Length: 421
Image 1 (cartoon, rainbow, N blue to C red):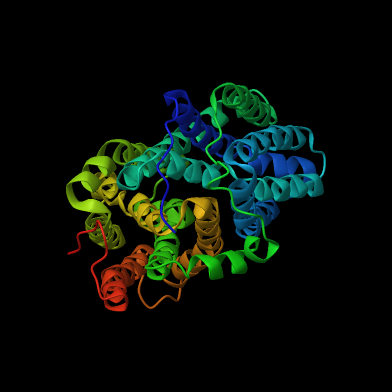
Image 2 (image 1 turned 135 degrees about the vertical axis):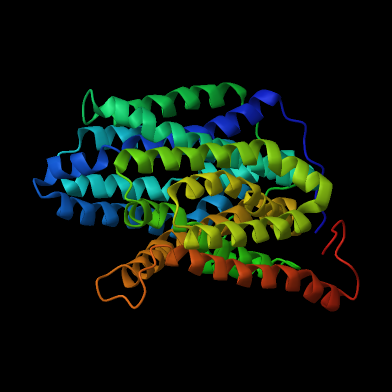
């Protein structure tokens, strides 16, 4: 099915999309510093028990994203991006208020479940970008979304930590206020991009994760890209999964130093997404940009797995930004394969795959860390999770190189508009 021309959209609409992703990340980051104290406050339990409940809350959020990402993506293909985005912001604002006034852990759990169900901002935002951007420019635009997320990743915990000093509930009220402000902005400037020509009927058969995945993998050339996207997500989630434990075990960092190192990573990530991804894709095309970025990931992950100097670790950290082209390039490649009436469904599937990575990666990486740092470990290797992630990225490279060759063989013709190594 041919792609339709991207409609002209005011710059304010693009600004709203980027602000939505940034504020979403800020809103999530705002609550990180205070969540342990809030859980202890509503349960009366120890920090260890609070950590267990924190894991339950995080996992429930990710599971709901996995289950409902394709549902919301399909709804946006049927009813439009604008109502899904604005309704998500309304529920997000209300959800933060519920968390701010929660008096029991079960209310907090219900709030996180609802938040996971309605977390359509990222996947619907990327579908909106696909609607308004020509295929050859989508990778750079997806990079801007990544930059917004990186900025939010840095600012959220910083602001949340400051507000937590005022009151345990203050970060949640602030997150709700940000969502309301962005809702008003979006209501004023955001036009609809789904037209009668691109609207697709909603089908429950295709709206669940498995049904949506079955539909999407039938698109030419997208199957291995999706597999690569999943492996990439599991590998790169090594950073939030074990960084704090790794820093303490390998370098003896305290909480403040861990926070500084995470800020360095977040700033570098945002810089790379905003300023490096576009030129890399323009110079090499999506396929080569992803290919070279994967090799950067292999090198930096291996280096972090082996390094013993904290100074070298901090020097390596900004270099990870050079691998930032991988995710937006893979998104752009997958987006090329999807017709205009299935962009939301595709982004919903990508959101589900990312949720799977968020659920499985912490289990894999923390288990690996434990095996190589416990008292009876055969080798003391706090960097083992990073080495495992590097091996995963090698598998990702193999799939990425194999993909266009298989597509070419199946079609008996080259993949259009792509150059391959």
